[in-house]
Amino acid sequence: MSLTREQILHEMGLTQWKLRARPAASEASPDAAPDEVPDDGRETAWEETRASDRESDRDYNPDEGRAAFRAAPPAVAAETTEPMAGASDADRVPACAPRDEAAGWAADENADGAWSDAAPDNFPATAPSPSAPRVGDAPEGGRGAQIARMGWDELRRSIADCRACGLCEQRRQAVPGVGDERADWLFIGEGPGAEEDARGEPFVGQAGKLLDAMLAAIDLERGADVYIANAVKCRPPGNRTPEAGEMAACAPYLQRQIELLQPKLIVLLGRAAVQAVLGVESSLASLRGKPLACAAGGREIPVVVTYHPAYLLRTLPDKAKTWEDLCRARALMRELKAGAALAP
Image (cartoon, rainbow, N blue to C red; front, side, top):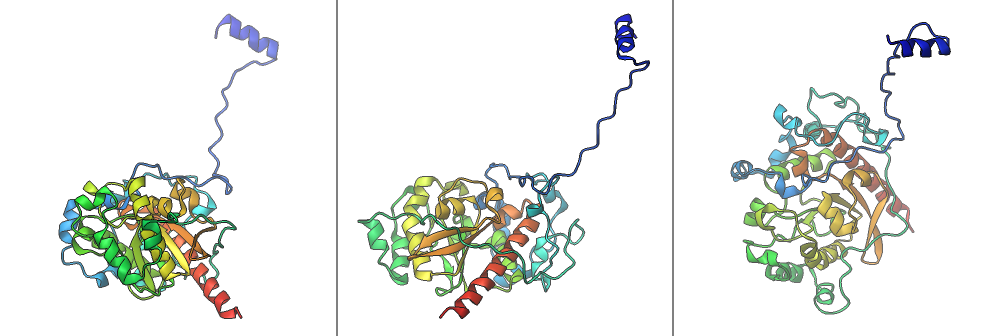
């Protein structure tokens, strides 16, 4: 010890200097903001499926979706981009489990936080916001006005022939949507990939299998009280994220689909779907669990936001968050149907 240091200690009335150990890190406050998924594009649907996956999907059967992703290769779990430590209560795994094995996709059997209890009937739901943005805001005249008057058949033909943006140049075919045209549930994804472009149906291949499992987890199935569409109807080159102008060109179609369907609830899968329907740039992590709605057909329709199935194929921890969102959506639908039954 130097003389200077001894003099300092003497003046302080100390005989020995000890460095205090730093206190252990405390747990995150329950009120802390949820971790956000970095905006690296991996929430985008078509960037998640490898070419090898496409080849394996040629004999795809939708019935396989129920048990398609009960477990995933351990190497995939390491690719998560969202830290798991310090998550707020809103991001913790809910103490709930599917009533059958259909929702085995939601967590590895050996993963921490796997559910052991039945999904609660009173899972917290969300209500529509007082003011909701419109979908697309189609112009009063011209193309938008024409689309706003179309029925289902004419709408499908118009989508098939559409040349409103550059996506038409490389597509094999447009992908309007599929399902029950009187459905209470509307699921909106981001855009067709290579397999969807070839088949003309949204959500086929690996992401489609996972979506089927997600639907089965809340007692739904493709085509039965469910309609599935995308924010853009043609495949972007190289399966890239759709650009703002491309989503704007498809917006009148999406708006008309919502107006014709008049669904009770809309589930948005992925950030591009959120941008197309709600018109916001916020991350999915910041929107999950919020009371959201969109205006269409003269009414406000509640909206639930969650991750895209293709993103979940590479980010296993977020399957738990998606299961929480599905529980919330199911609870909200029950409230909506109960309210409709009591209405005069």
